[in-house]
Image (cartoon, rainbow, N blue to C red; front, side, top):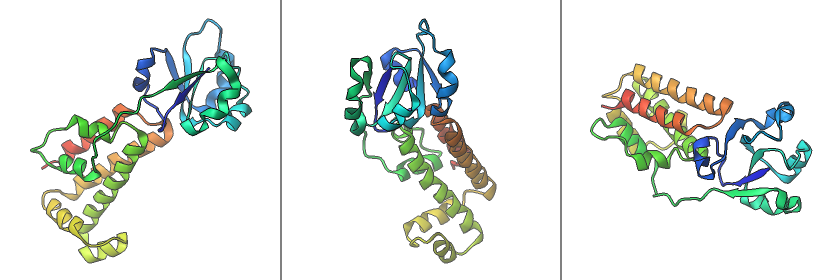
Length: 221
């Protein structure tokens, strides 16, 4: 058995290529159904992608330490697993320092037909589920603001969204001169689809990148 120490849940198996381990991604809820399929001559590890394990939740699973599982844990919980001894291998993902980007840096790129995809900027918002969800929340609210401003007065929209009518509204009013409601609606559909996909199947790095490229093609002007 192995423990992966990470700050954010990892779902994309490509992030684990550095360990050179044969992996199969499974949900923590599927562990009882996997028990019969674990044989001594099976080198493939079952990677639990959708939940951090705690020591108390681990003991409830009654896992044999010789079974090929990889669980994700937070660094703060690592010391609690020391009682398991040397039979447990601990893996670490190196945390790389990221440049300081903001959600509007990416949205500005999305809307501009004059700007190509900046890979560093793209990576900064897709490298982890938390970063991508934070951007997605910001972007969906921006799309809703655009959609509402097509039909309603800016003061009404600001009141409904409970936000200050500031530079965001000046920027949004300029954008809707170049965007029709069908494109905004489709971008919202894409956004809700990727959010639903993450909730059901876990975070996939490549899916998030494809989503951002798709909405750029749709909205750029």
